Image (cartoon, rainbow, N blue to C red):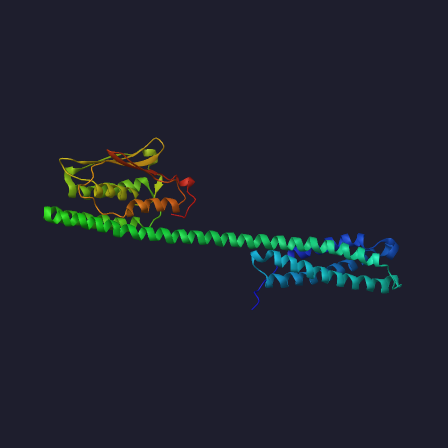
Length: 350
């Protein structure tokens, strides 16, 4: 079934027809043909001729827009419109001149050059008007497609971000349960305290993970609560220092970024009171967030698919932000996370 299509061109018709009729009044008619006294009648006749040509060619344009509506069909649509508009214009203008020859000139034998001149001038007007129609149509189509493409892009990004969010909660739960399991054997009382803190923190995680971005201030407030849970588990084995420039507190980052990095440090390094794991969280001169820890890898390496770090990397790519930087030396492991200035953030609304 042919697609519904409207030209929405009333403004163009109402403005264009009188202008072209007025121009035709001077091009196609002159005082030698009809006399100066009938100027209004000449204009009216010119307007009727313009109206007939305009509406006939308009139907041609409408027909081929319905038949070839897509932007990628522009070349075919324009070619067919051009061919059939030329045919319609030649036929109608020839008939018009013939009637004028019989009724007004009363000779019935105007030269072929008269026909050709009138047809060519009419074709010039038709091509100009048709070009305006097609230009407006092309721009509108392009605008619609651009808007739809942007909406689809955002929808795809949203889907991917949602997928990344789903990865985080099980990731945190799995690691926390592993810590809880170890603590049950070592100190059941601490295990009970740890479980209560874990429950409170997990509720916060579920709420924070609904957002795509959060402020550094909110993230660090959560880290304070999260670090209390880790302190219950490791006591003096974990030493955490925080130095955040207050000017950076309103900058943004994906929720749980710092938590993932802190959790990653604890997971892969030995933590003991005799050999404490030292984690530093600070902002550098370039207003990046840095999470750094001394490197003391466990004697039995922990199996890992790097879900946490990969999750952060993927989020920054999806949000079209600068990449995070990961540096490892013989003594230290450092992750530098670019903070997102809200005024520069043009991604999905948070």
